[in-house]
Image (cartoon, rainbow, N blue to C red; front, side, top):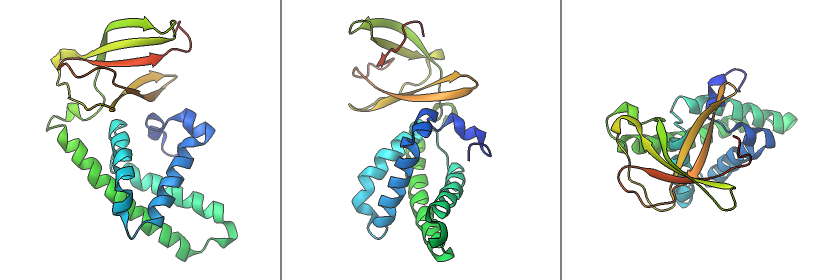
Length: 197
């Protein structure tokens, strides 16, 4: 998938791809949803949690057919000789139903951000305060948006997705917000593996 769609390297966590947690999470989600296809309301809390992560990574409707195509190829390969067109068609139909639910819910999340398209993707944030805590292994950062751009309120338990470009690709990480919203900044804590980074 990544060879044919290198733009997805900027969305998917490559470390999780290499160790297998991301493909496993996708497969488990699709299986769980397919198992509950006649009663998707029972898994809606899980779906909504995932849609927030998708929104944080700027996943768009056009990404779903790509992932669906390669998911079906993986299912076909996994099943081997047991794979029939009827089985693949059933998985494709289930994926389409699930993908459309995600697309609809994620559209609502994007719409909640307002009409300014610049607010719907990653925006530049600047470190205005840096404090080393916890035996120099954790750094608390206070971040503000440039040009006094809109800051969005958040709820306890939400996170901020930070995107950094390294080695030619973007890397995304979710960090829990550590202080109540003050209207002008976000606060996160990052564990540092190497203080020189």
